[in-house]
Length: 331
Ligand SMILES: NC(=O)c1ccc[n+]([C@@H]2O[C@H](COP(=O)([O-])OP(=O)(O)OC[C@H]3O[C@@H](n4cnc5c(N)ncnc54)[C@H](OP(=O)(O)O)[C@@H]3O)[C@@H](O)[C@H]2O)c1
Image (cartoon, rainbow, N blue to C red; front, side):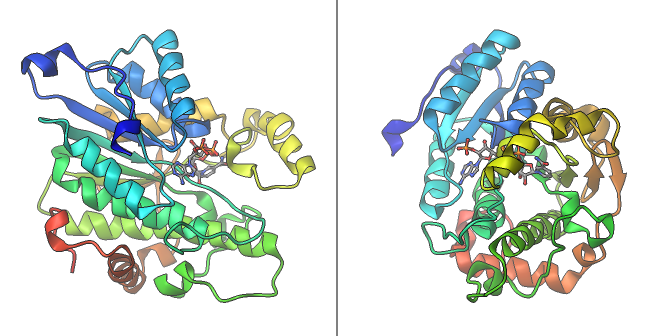
């Protein structure tokens, strides 16, 4: 695996040791919101190294070429990361940490899936939506914490669908326990309904983790926030939907961004995500939830500290991390 990574470029400054290199890591930047986030990062952070963390190396290479062409940022690399595999997450963190002097100024946990078809499982046996959207990013974040700049940010792309009051048309989340979510019992319920509920619940998990992690980082300047991009038609998120729905998602629904509240283009949402993670304007925001550019309250359940603690403790057990592998007390 170590030989697979692409080290496209590096800064002159870091080679010469003139200044400490700082990195921005973005997951899910090969498509949709994450891709647009990477473009905006390249604009607003010309002096930072941008790390595209992705499972598809060819797609990662193309993203780098596109960003170089469109924005001209030279210091972009791509490292392999498959959030469906704990081993891949560990290997990503190990590879990243080998770049000496590297500090993370922004970690953007944006990658995510929605599976409304047959239930799938990650390489470690977790239900795949929960594994990709919560377990993978959680593990990644803990392993990267030792390299976080004290002034850095961690941002989770969550979703308004986590809040039953928002009436998004997606089944509302049900948080029972972390273990139930990782290893769900068989059900006779319609796959699409189950899949949508798993998705909204995984997004609730992103927000529960945002608040719990921020609390545990209280003695640092690191800020942890959650971001709702709104509904963003046209991205790859609907790839398990029936073909007619996928057609509408790609070709018809983007029109809604012109007039409907909280429906956005990937460009707008990606720009806002990058700004939240990096720009000066949000430097004082800690443990907050943003709908686009606006800080709002998240759902009642997301503030439930019993849920937050249960999710934290059982996720720690599921990933099997040791205390010395991260920089905050995990128990
Ligand atoms: N679109 C919306 O309406 C909407 C609304 C609210 C929240 N969100 C959230 O926004 C985020 C981005 O979604 P999007 O709409 O931009 O979808 P997208 O176009 O499908 O992008 C998802 C990204 O995540 C990556 N990814 C998926 N599984 C991965 C894995 N196992 N390991 C590493 N990377 C993986 C994909 O990489 P590959 O190219 O390799 O598949 C892709 O780059 C997600 O967290 C989603 O839940 C989206």
